[in-house]
Image: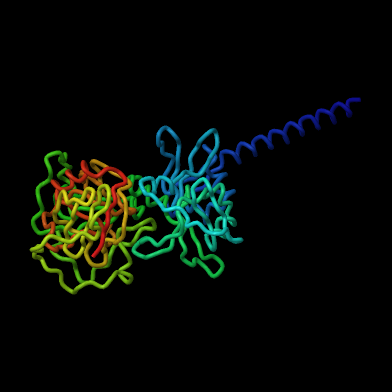
Length: 422
């Protein structure tokens, strides 16, 4: 009798242990985490992001996390190289980065045609998916991961290269022949938007030196600026920085052997020099005697026309010129990309970070920043006053005088068309 009771007690204890192990295993799975040494970020299941990432081919479709958990409109989100995950309605879900990036753009609907066999039509958006984009969309649970198309395939300048892309609600797909079997990849839209919001450094380097505002080595977009010999004083609103900070020496010219800073993965302002368009061997430092001719003669609404050849901009409203002034665009090797863009993000004041030759800087209080393409922005510049002289001093952004930038920031709302051309 005693043996029977002991046996029963044994099995009760064993059963309890098994149940406890199952519960612990479940809790461990729910609270598991993964460290990404390449970015120094961690992915866990506090909001189910790790589980979503692992079950949706996160390594390829999202890439590594590039931020921790941040709150946007009181919603926990985490940015990845190629996307963003959000905690909504008690579950993890992909963020609408494609819609956010194209919020102020309008895409023409698909041309009416007979529906093809290898085609998916979305009546709600007026767009279609076909060819390589459709195969990639279907192979990777596109309904959940990418969402419906917001545009038809088009050519855009991405990272200094011309690519055929298509925008979707939650991503941008690029046709770039990743491998023989895969001709499409997910664009680094997560990094592009995180950079524009100042959530990450372009090179993910933790060690950053501080550059005094108005001194050499000011930084914009994702790369260090070339400082002029006599910088303009800091605007009155800039607070003083610690005087004990070590400041790099002021360069007076671009060294011939200097290597450009590495391009970041998401809409870098520094195109690959091997792909940059050929330019004259010397740039005249004389302002043009005649007003630049806008590339867009008469368009309804507000348009900013930037002429890289004359280093001038023309602001027009309903085809009528309302302002002309000089600019300073990207120097050779960091040429400002051409194309038709829209102002998609504005910041009245921003600390801009960048890197050059392995050294990182921070320049505070860059005023009136208007992003048009990834990390490329129109913005006020207080470290030189060579606008419209032909001197190209930036690493991709379009430098404006403080007065012109302040005017443009107030005049140009989100979505304003910006045409950049030679």
